[in-house]
Length: 371
Image 1 (cartoon, rainbow, N blue to C red):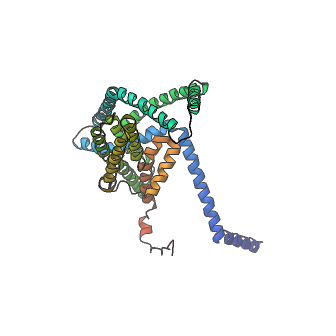
Image 2: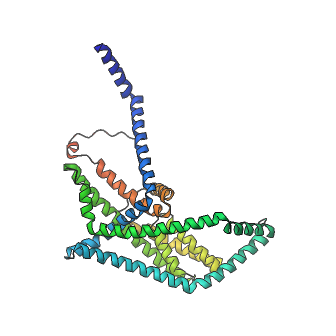
Image 3: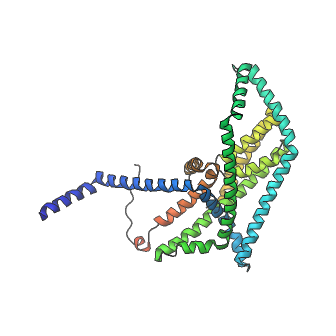
C-alpha cells in the first residue's frame, strides 16, 4: 500500500512539474491574479465617488510636499503650514477661474456672432458644395435634433446631469477635506499603515511611501511647468492672431497638457476650430502652426529636462494606461492613469529587488528572449 501511494505521489509530482504542468500552474496563478485584480477594480469603480477624490488629494499633496517640508523646516507648525498651503492654492485656483469668467463674458458675444456666421457658411458649403446633400435632408436633421431635445429621453439625461453635478460637488468637498489631512498628517498616516511590518518589509514600506510621494510630486510639478509654458506661448500666439477667448483657450491648453500625448493635440484642435469659426481658414492654419511648433519645442527640449526621472515609462505603456484610465474613469481617469502607472512601476521595482540574503547568492544565467 505504501509503495502504491509513493508511486502515485511521484506520478502526480511528474505531471505537475513537467513543462505542461508548470505552464498549467502558472496559467492558473495568472488567472487568479487577474480575477483578483478585476474584483478590486470593480470594487473601486463602485466607490469612485470616494476613490477619485482620495487619489487626486494624494497626488496634489505629493506635489505640495516640498512646500510643507520647507515651512516645517522654518519652524511652522503642521496645522499652520497646512492652512497656508491649502488657502494659497485655493486662492490661486479661484483667481484663475475668475479671470476665465471675465474673459468669457467680454468676448462671448463676438464668438457667438462668429459661430452663427460660421454655421451659415458651413450650411452654404454643404448645400452648394460637392456633397450630395439637399435642403430636405438638412431640415430632417434639424427636426431630429429638435425632437430629441424635447423628448423624455433628453429630460432624463438632464436629470442625470443634475445628479452628476451633485456628485461633483460632493467629491470636491471630500477632496478638500482629504487633502487637508494628507498635507497635515500624511507621513503619520503612512507610518500607521506600515506599522504591522517588521524588518526588511518595514524598510521597503518606508521606501515605497517616499518613492510614491516623490514620483507623484515630480510628475505633477514637471507636468505643471510644461503645461504652463505651453499655455503661455500658445496663448500669446492666439492673442497675436486675434483669436477670441484666447485666455480661456490657454487655460484649456494648460489643463489638457496633464493628459500626455493626446491632450495637447485635443487642445490645439479646439483652438484651431475657434479660429476657423471666429476668423478664417488661414488664421486657423496659423493657429495649428503655432500649436505644432510649441509642442515640438516642449517635447524635444523642455519635457526631458523638466520631467527628469519622474516618469520613466515607454510611450506604449503611457498609451495603454491612458486607454485603460479613460475607459474606467473618463477624463479624470485619463489624467490620473499616467502618474499612477509611473508610481506603480516604481513600487514594483522596489518589491522585486532582492533581499540582502538573495543579493549575496550567485546570480542565475539570464536567457535571451530572442536569438
